[in-house]
Image (cartoon, rainbow, N blue to C red; front, side, top):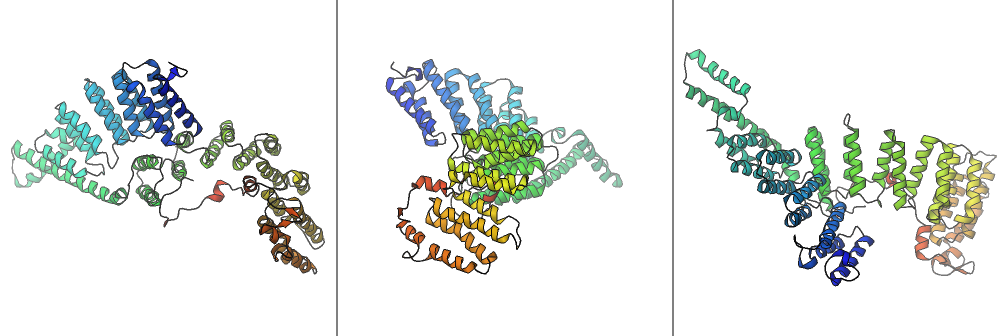
Amino acid sequence: MGDFSNYGGSDEENAEIKRLNAEVDADTDNFENWEKLVRACEGLEGGLNRNSSPQALATLRATYDRFLLKFPLLFGYWKKYADLEFNISGPESAEMVYERGCASITNSVDLWTEYCSFKMETTHTPHLVRELFERGATHVGLDFLAHPFWDKYLEYEETQEAQDKIVAILNRVIRIPMHQYARYFERLRTLAQTRPLLELVSADALARYRAEVEAENAPYGIQKSEPEIERDIRAKIDAQLYTVFQQTQAETTKRWTFESEIKRPYFHITELEHAQLANWRKYLDFEESEGNFGRIVFLYERCLVTCALYDEFWFRYARWMSAQEGKEEEVRNIYLRATTLYVPVSRPGIRLQYAYFEEMSGRIDVARDIHAAILNKLPDCVEAIVSWANLQRRQSGLDAAIDIYKAQIDSPTVDIFTKAALVTEWAYLLWKVKGSSEEARACFSKNVQWYSDSRHFWQKWLEFELGQPTNAELEEQHGARIKDIIQMIRSKSRLSPAVKQELCQVYLNYLQDRGGKKAMKEFLALDRELYGPQSISVITKAKLGGKENGVAMGELDEPTRQKAEARFYSFYQLHMDPDPNAQGPASFN
């Protein structure tokens, strides 16, 4: 076989699968690479069947398992996997795949319908088939487009010639707002003319209808025959069914506008249009206003199939569920699904929110572990490090928070500009929490030699000094400190001229707002240096590609400069309400 015989197939096939595996491992979010790998595995040895080699079958199964772990909402691939298992190993193996698929995408009408259809064809024990249909009904029965599932359920009962069960199913379905509600009503209305009364209504309801009929005839002394009484009872049942129909029609009409705007009711890795997200928001607003817990949860679950890659809906679901009484485990499950399956760690906001939830719940070690897991993948995530330090401060005190910063600053895997941001957070803890401005100032001064190329470092140091309390006697000393920082920015930093201008503008504002009698002399001198023509301004000359102090600019290469001048924001600082007028594809970020 060659060096790659563990995959099965020819040497050429093995080499191809090895190459595709490497591409998938290099970029696990690339859906096209996954598809190529799956197709290559299916095509091993000319197409897999029960006579294929164990290596080829193991390769196929391992690939499908990895693929569907990464993309569990792709119902079509679960069906395809189940079909392959049926052809290779028989119905029991296929059923195991269906079970896994329905557990992964519990509200897929298509997958439940396929599973139930498979069960109808492979199982000859009616109660087992019915149990599966009932399980499916709890998960997809309320879907606006659930008619394929209900049609399959009715089809099965027709094959069993179980008219009583057909009536019972129809009695349930006519109460569900859905796309094809009217035809179920018409079918039940037709059956109601001939089926036994106790199939149509409960014994108590039947007794009540009979009493009503007899009471209506009593004043006239009329004694109706049993067939006549039954006729009148059927008329009352028909009237009641029509009332149910009108109610369902009204509920369906309320939802029709939202449902008609859903262009993609299934999961896909491509972006949705802004209009689609706006429609889901409005639909959820409507269903929440209706106040039916079951229907609200069902709509959220539907939404999070289509919008699984959009953080906002996971946040919304968790927030809504947390407002319901006694739903802590449900909230935890929402966060778990979001963080372990759908939202990539590159967008850590939902993971941090999950950590706050676990901290609130008293599971401090879990909250710590969530932070550690983020940093395992994103060692330079300033927001996660700061969040972890604050968790330690809340739970174990100031020294524990500082220990987090020390450990990250000493870490060889953390970028120097990330460390610069962490030093400023450390200084602010000393200032804001410990109340020691001197220790905070010492923290800045001691570290300036390491982080002089960090825009964030200088900005936070300026903000710190500007935030210090002062008075007429201390203002001169206060101004001198700020001036020293500005001079260091101009002389020690390799930041771009534009950023230096931005930072030095802070001092210009200070001189205007708080400077003394001679402040305007210094103001105009600095203004000249920052904004004057290149013949008199070294910064302007440098911006135009010249030299500053005789030294060629651009000492930082472009990738380093971008890191040096980056701004660090938290999730909530970046949060914006959706633009209702936005058009085109909506980014996942």
